Image (cartoon, rainbow over all chains, first blue to last red):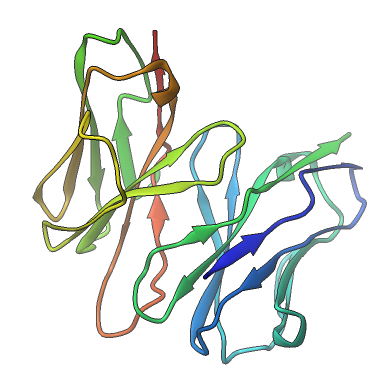
Length: 114
Length: 115
């Protein structure tokens, strides 16, 4: 069975702090895809990143970076120098090689205070 | 502006009402989805449509009735709902092709309250 676990329910930081959101996944597939989405209070799920299981290279996009480690089945997300606008719920998700269906974690609510 | 638009953004309905949620995607995708997001629950996939054909119904009660007249439009017809159906309903789309794991793009959601 596929499963995504985001153990951190809520994280609070002060602006300019770095913060890491954890994501651990379970799958028996050898080919799979991992995603992160951001959900601001408006409700829309904003796509942030997609990685396939064969690409373990870490990725950096501005203040965002992702650390994919197959050995620990983790796909962690770090925001450097956090800003108030980063406040949102962040979801990690997994899809298998057969479909585009996403299995979501329960999300981590990030609050960044000025 | 999002490539997937949903209307209405907010809906309050009584348990005996009939209403519909509408979704339109402007991304040229061929698959559309309805997801439900309840408080303190993971996002749940409800329905999947590929090329206008329903390919998945995730054991959704019949009081939710989807309709996909073309690849760009998706409706969710609501009838005799229960208060526990109050949730955020998210529409999404993706381009299904020879490869899988395609990125799914979501709309802003429709906040539904059943009273």
